Structure formats: structure tokens, C-alpha cells
Image (cartoon, rainbow, N blue to C red):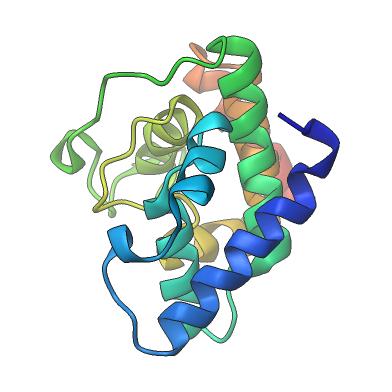
Length: 175
């Protein structure tokens, strides 16, 4: 594995997904070569992750974009390689396990849903029906002036401390 080359390799795979999706190709299993799929898996990523970025890229004026996607996946990759020892989780959360989109904590909507969703992203446990950094997540991040990757690192630092995460978000929202 060429760690130093990860950003450029990721960008090539990202661009390929965006191009294929833009050309009308659908179906996660049809986007990548076996080598690209192995590259993704070796770094804790899935074809679904890239498909989601490509789909949103075309549906939301280029968002979240390659820079946010790379930043998010660098955090996921770091967790996968260093906290999980390069072993993928066998758990996949159910979308119904997440709090409602309308749930609030300390008056902040979406946060009760986003915390476990970020945990699942960090651990590689999101189902194919959920995307970390989706339109709803991006709205939350914009409103509270938080980078999506920054929130992932926050969740990693305070993995079992949702109150500490909420405290941090409240402070950031005020700044």
C-alpha cells in the first residue's frame, strides 16, 4: 500500500465515479475495476461511498465535492487502519436505529441523528441507504460552521461522550 499516494489515488477513483454517474451509469457494482475495489477496501472505503459522492455531486451542484470527500475519507481511513487495525467491521447499523431527523439536543436539530451516524461512518458501519455528508448533514454543518471531517474527528475523540460532542457543537455554533 502506498500511503503517500492515497490522496491522488482517491481523487482518480472519485473523478471516475463522478464521470460514470454523469454519463448515466448506475449501479454501485458497475463503477470500479477489481483493482479499484481492492484499493477502496484496503483503505476502509466502499464503492457505495464513492457512488454516494458522485450522485450528490450531480444532484447538488458539485457538493460535497472532492475536497470534503477526501477529508472525510482520510479520517475514516485513519480510523480503519489505526483503530481497527485494517479490519472491517462486520456490523451494519439499520437506518431505523438512528433518531428522527427532527430530534433535537440542546435545541439543536439533527445532532441526535448525526452523532450515531458519524460513529457508523467512522466504524464503516453505515448501510448503503445512508450517506455521511448527505444534504441534511451538509445543511447542519453549514448552519453550525463545522467541517464534515472535523465532526468525524470530534466523534472519534469523544466516542463514548455524546455530551462532550454536544458541548463542542454548542460552542462552535456560538462562534
